[in-house]
Length: 317
Image (cartoon, rainbow, N blue to C red; front, side, top):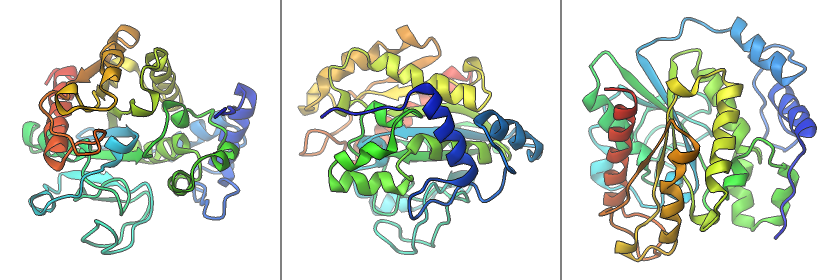
C-alpha cells in the first residue's frame, strides 16, 4: 500500500494550523488557547515561552512513543495496580472514562497528570514498558525526584506514522481499527506528543525519549535513519539538545520466544551507529505471548526495568 507524505512546506503549514486551531476532525480540541494566536510553528514555539512558568528541575519527564508493545498488549495483573508511588506520574494524552477498559480508577482528562497506575496509553490498552520504567526510576532516584511520562503509541503503526510530516488524510487507507486509534490522536500522533511535551515542559524538564517500534518495519534497513528523523524533529521543536535527552529503543520479541519479527533486532541494535545518544535494551529472556509479537505482563515488567537501567546509565546516575 502506497503512503503519501506532506512535503516540508505543507507539513510546516499543517503543523502550525493544528497547533493554533486544532485539526478539522470532529473531536479535535487544539491547544485551548494556551499559547496565544500563533500563526506559524515558530510563533507557536516562541509564544509558548511567554507562558512558561518556572519548571521544577526535580520533575523528570520522558516521552514514550511506539507501536503495540509500547501501547501495551498484556492485561495488567492485580500486582500492577498496587503500590504505584505517586512520584511516578503520567500525563493523559487522551480522555479516559472512569472504570473503562483496563482503567480501574477515576476518569482522566487529556493533558492532566495522574499517578501512573495502568493503563498509561489509553483505557483499553495494557501494561507497557513505561510502567516498570517509571517505577524503577523512582526507586533508584532520590526521594526529591518525581518522574513523569508522556505516552503516545499506536498498535500496528509504521515508524513513518510518527513523522510530523505524516499526511493525516491517508489514514482512510488503513484498516478500520487502526483508523480508530489514530483518531484518538487527531490522526497526527507526532503533534499530540509535541502538544503534551510543550505543556509538560512548563512543569518539569524533559530528560529522555523511550521508543518501542519495529515490527511494522521489519527488515527496513532505513529504520535507524527514520528514528533519527523523529528524534531530530522533537529536539528541534522542543528546543532540546541531544546530549541532554538520550533516546532508548527496545528490541522486539526475541528468537528465544519464537518472535515473528526477531530479525528486526539486528537493525534495532545498530541504532547507536546513527544516533550517538541512543541506547538499545535487550529483549532476551523477556517472555512472549502466543501471538509471537507481544510480551507477556512479566515480559513488560522485565523490559521496562531494563529501559530504566539504560536511562539511568545514559544520565550518569
